[in-house]
Image 1 (tube, rainbow, N blue to C red):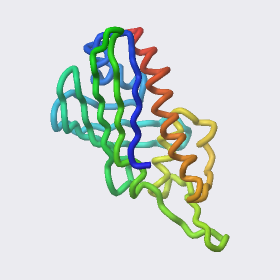
Image 2 (image 1 turned 30 degrees about the vertical axis):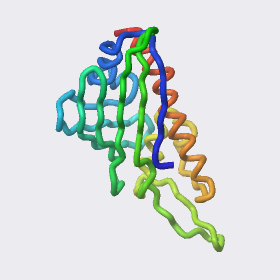
Image 3 (image 1 turned 180 degrees about the vertical axis):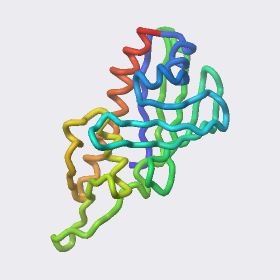
Length: 184
């Protein structure tokens, strides 16, 4: 998987949803701590320290901004060679706002392959000292019990990792963002 596209609708006008995507405090309430500012070219970070002993830093830069319709920023987990791109598109609908999240460039160059003791097999190892550690650490946002301890998985099971990344975004959009919107 190199792209993830999710669509959600909310019973609020685009301006209110835009606020949840661009206000640093609101964004922290449903996603991660950050120093986001809705300014073209602004470099910012998302920081997740929710898992004991792990701190994930995601470096970002606002590359497109069209209030209250479209927000695009780069997303580079520390230790990864290439950033991915997060695109938010807000469309007014009769019932409120349709939100599309398009996270492109996922997992390309994100995982390190380490030879396994088993011939013809490769393992992806989770360690905060390896480049893929921060990626799996980011997954701990939604599943701290699942990712708190080091794990290994085979390349043949990368679908498992992709599914979990999708689950993290879905949970944030369906549950956490919805709760923040009620409070705005």
